[in-house]
Image (tube, rainbow, N blue to C red; front, side, top):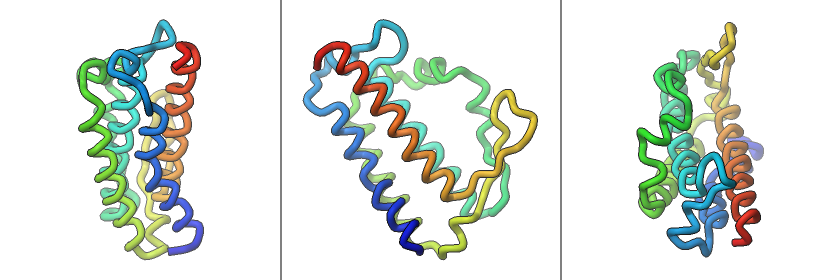
Length: 166
């Protein structure tokens, strides 16, 4: 493993703590606050974790079979808001989801710490909705995607907290 990989893994290991910090001090009612439209804080928590879990599975598939097509077309069949309703984002407690996130992230980091450095270049192929051309995503790309996804949704949560002064 390279120093760069180690740095990414240290940042990845902190993802659950970052999400918990984003919602620290909120009560159950505050978790349901929105900007007036769009997802609530609770829904962002579940979406963020479910997205990370889904991509963790794809990472494992890529490590096992370099160059595979990432099997995500089933997810693209619905809008994210529909997945949120079907997966009950607005109703579920956040505690079990955060506990799962801690364990799955620790497991993923342990896996990635123990693969050969060259396996970070293993990749999968995905065709995003609306694109005609496949995109190649390496293990490193997906780890960076995890970090960016957290940045995006902790900012969304902070915007809601700021709007409601909490």
